[in-house]
Structure formats: structure tokens, C-alpha cells
Length: 196
Image 1 (cartoon, rainbow, N blue to C red):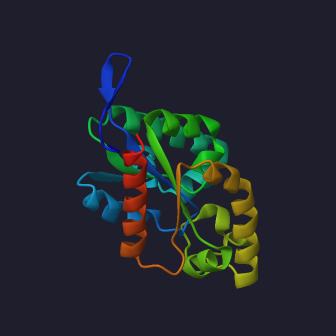
Image 2 (cartoon, rainbow, N blue to C red):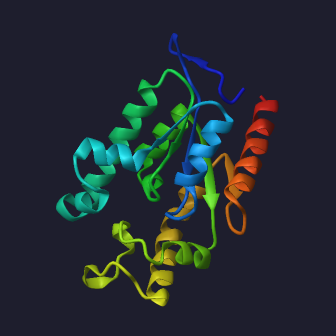
């Protein structure tokens, strides 16, 4: 089963479900519902990073830059995935898979799920999001103009898509309720389970 432990190096390790996708794709809303359906726990990697660093993701970017953040992100995900004794659903940050070390950790510990969404729908969902440091308008303005936001999302999505496309499962979250997306994801997880 998806949640069954597999033997590795003399010990049992759970097979986690990692949710990847651009900011606004639904990881933080779908993740907890999926975990409830699977009767397991949900973890948000960004929230854990903020707790560990004692400051927001935006502040980490401002104070330390993206490379330092990606290192902290990779370390946090590795520590979490390796410390859990039961399967869990783990939401990754939107750019987490740009770090190949992070992707390797994900592959070692579970299945990768890509929650996809078109650029225009992402822009609609993220229009007023001020907590996404890579989407801020020039000069630090919190609200980007629609055309600027579309351009930024399209550029970042192009950079991140190769990592997303290597996922084991893909579910589009566009024009669906959270429950519909969760249901589709559960069916795809069961199909993988049946093929084992």
C-alpha cells in the first residue's frame, strides 16, 4: 500500500506523499484534507522552516538570500522525512524541487505529487498575496499589477516545471473544488498501490 513501510538498510521507513506545485496550486488546502482521507498527518514545509528559523520566509529571503533559504529548506525536509515513523502528507515550497538535493530526499522517502494549475488561475489566486517573496513587484510593493504578476509566474513556472514534471502523480487543481482534487488524488494513489 502507499502507506505501508518498506524495509531499507535494516529498518522500516514510511513512504510519504510529497505535494509539489507553484504557490497557489492548492498544496496547503489539499494537503490537510488528503491527510484526513488517508488517516495520517500533514506537514507544511514552509511553516516548519519559519519555526526553525524564527522568522518568515520573506524575511529569510531578505536577510539571507535564496541560496541560504534553499539549503535550510533541504535540511528541514530531510530531517522531517527521516524522523517520522508513520506515513505523512508533506507540502513542499513552490521552488523546493529546484534544489536537486531536495528532490533526491523526496525520492528516497516517498512519492512526488504535482498539483498543476494554469498561469492565469495562479495569478488570480495570488493577486493579493504579499507573503511570496519571489512574486513581489519591484521596489517591494506587495501587490503586483496583473500583467507583471502573470509574467513573474510564467517565468518562475518555466524554471520549476522540469522538477514538477518528474512527479509520480499529476493532478490539475484548476476549476475543481478541494474535495474533487482530493478524490482524484486518492484514486491515483490507489492505482499506484494496486500496481505494486
